[in-house]
Image (tube, rainbow, N blue to C red):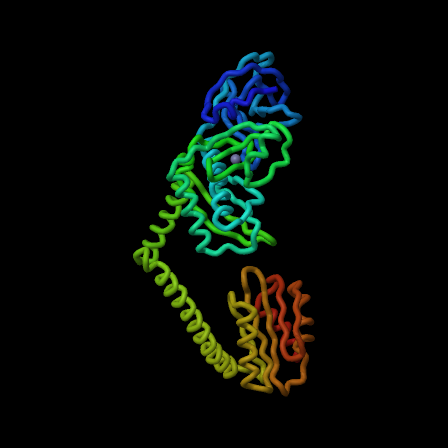
Length: 390
Ligand SMILES: [Zn+2]
């Protein structure tokens, strides 16, 4: 079995070991400082004799180091190098989780039922259906106090009998090789992960947000260097907004609200203007009507606009038929509408001309519309429609 250096001293960054098994994809070593994925903590990365270690897993009680390329055959000894930035980050998030979970439990009795350490942030799921903003603030404050006091984080191995002396935060199902991670007078926990020696090395805990799950609350948080990275990103967004909205930080929200409100009122004004424009347009089209038929062609007008215009035209003249066509990016759209006293089916009219443009459409007796390809000009399409009427 491989000697677990990361348990003897979690600060070991380099080591040498004998190769005791060499497979095509992985190697097993006499001892290792590489932490394998487990207990919510992702595996370490780094190098063995300069070759990248891409994954570390425990399979059949073997710690397997997966490599980017194979070691030369019959390699006897390797020099291991841990990616320390990644490991320290994991230790900070993991110990931070112990502290945060213990704080929630000691203040409010919320038990942690799972932990996930992600690339950007970590989460715990609390066995409760509600947490108030005040409870979050209080817990965060308490957890950061524990960090500030720089309490020791001890790890000990105990037997099942010895385990009875400790009041664990969460019962363990382990029967042997039980490893306890202890922050004296605060947190007693069975855990196989790596942790710093003192709480101070976690540096800071910040709760980012909570998310309501079915029967629990998910709390997202960050610790250590991640807090700085996060703050830096937030600052950048903030500075950009300050410059874009031309307002100081404390007035940003009001400035954003004003911009949105102005946008909405402009949209309303544009809609009103468009409405009155359509009335003028309809009047002009009617004045050019021939034998109670109005026709017109356009570029790039939406079918909704055409419908509105046609409806306005026939609304003001019950004996009129209105046929409008618009060309939009190689497509033709046609709308036909009739006044109340015209005895014609607009659906039939449109259905009759659509085959010329390989089109599809729909509608009813009073108004119908359709669209297809620009296989002929807008004017020719109107001629086809007129031919059908007459
Ligand atoms: Zn742990």
